[in-house]
Image (cartoon, rainbow, N blue to C red; front, side):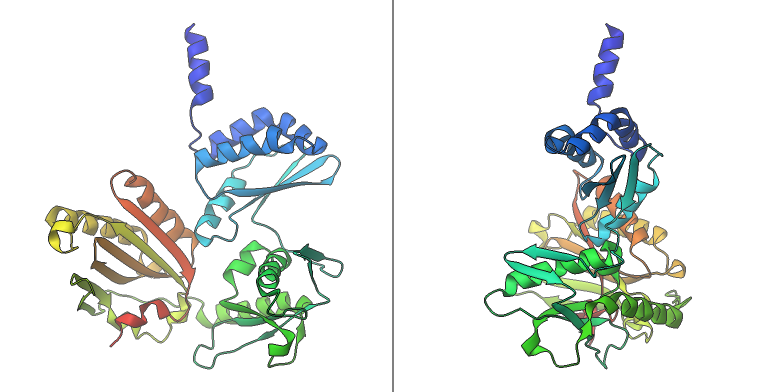
Amino acid sequence: MNFLKNLFNKKDKPIKTYHEFWEWFVANERKFFAAVQKRDAIEAEFFNALSAKLGELRSGYFYLAGMPSEDLVDLTFTADGNIKNMVFVEELVNAAPRIEGWEFTALKPPIDDIGGMYISMGGEKFSSENIFFYADDDADCPDEINIKVVHADMDENNKDTIINGTYIFLDNFLGELRFATTVDNLTVIGKVDAEQELVPIEKLKTFLIWREKEFIEKYEGVRHDTEQDTYSALEATLENGNPLVAIINTDLLRWDARASHPWVAAMEIKYNGQNNNGMPDNPTYQLLNQIEEGIMAELKDIDGYLNIGRQTADNSREVYFACKDFRKPSKVLDAVVQQYAGKLAISFDIYKDKYWQTFNRFMP
């Protein structure tokens, strides 16, 4: 009886680690392989179970499955373009054991040859025959990679379909990681709106690799020591009459190498300040500072993570970092969310902003 009880408890115990997930997968992989091979019951016999177990591990996992050959299943895990989840997809796949008949891929890979590739969506076709691009450089922001993508058949009637389909096409062509991390601004336009010579879309990947290499060479090893920087206290009054207080490293905002730390990490912590004009009471204030200090102990300026400052108002504190990369901030801030789950409503976002335009409102 004790054996059966232990077996039942183990079966129902939620998956919490990569190791536990892959143990479960290995125990079921023959059944899953057969489901992909048969195709007709893949949802019921594979995808439903896979989705449930990935959801136990954490939210934000997506996947694609196919068979490049009759004896091999390719299972691709994807973050669906969400930057802050990509590191967890990569870690999941890195932890995967070798399983005969299976190939695991982190993030949708690029397609090397798009000569015969096309996507049909909403009655429209997306291929190298009708998609082009050109660089839309900004003299004020020379390090930004701004791309105008031109679809020859776009007009006002099919605009939404063309934009969505073009994004899907580029995601497949460039691969999930490159598409999400190298292009700063992308606009889809019709041929009639093009202002420069059109370049075949096949050359976009080479262009992005060149620009990325140029950027890395320019800013390789650039760091900023914030120890001697000046932090300014900024105050304002919101429309509802509540105060806003921000402590911002204004020296850092004037730094001429801002683009070297192109990723902005912004965390928001909600609290109850209803009895204090939207501001935290003293115990809450101390807790917020404790959380921020813990983050700063992990994200250090010498390692490429610069604390821009914080803003407090209307039952919310926002903490800002400019970062060399997105992977470590994703893990550090996610750990904070998990640590205080059920105690504080904490969320965060990570996005590319090479010239820190997010913080223009703090400049005089």
